[in-house]
Length: 308
Image (tube, rainbow, N blue to C red; front, side, top):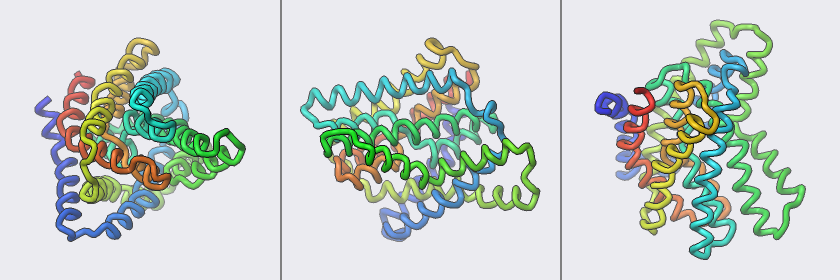
């Protein structure tokens, strides 16, 4: 584990630098927002497009990984919602607690870090997991929140979900990359080099942006945030491991990638959605802060176990 921990230290060190820049005010919230936008729409999108364009659908889609990850994630999502209902939460708040407990920072942290720690062969499974998180669970939270507020499921809800997916640059990058890959035509070298240079900015940019955004997060409702962080960092990878190793036995390497991805801390976009819908943003904020801090140890431990 020590060897893996030392390899993860540089990644979390960049997060720490970003946190320091944000906490001291050197990097303002506006600056963080613009850096995040650059990474989201340009650098990370270039990285994902380049990966997708150089992989076939068969390299990415493994039904065993998809089924195992879906099972484990749905289990934890349902568990967190059930506990929230037992505490008297409404559907919207329970849904966001499920989102916090089961959706990790696969885009900003998972793709850059796991691709380097576990090798580029891990990229296919990471992209598959990212797609599942975005298409299935990001859509689910919108349906839960809007449906509970309107009192029913209408076509307008599914239109909102569809438009949201079409506007998500990660989804667009994956789809466009597949389209290029399907043609069988290699990307011209100048374009591939352009994408490689722009995509290279994704890793430091995303990690710095994570840290800077954490500086504005508060640690309120610690008992709830602690429970949700435990779900995300411990129960989620454990349940995904049950899915990919036992229920839907997959290739050991790809199964390990899925478990490592499940061990990632809470995704930052969950806070963006919580703030947009004004549903428990402080609770989500605290869970992101706690889970990201603890993940310095827990992610290293999980990766060291799946690489054995």
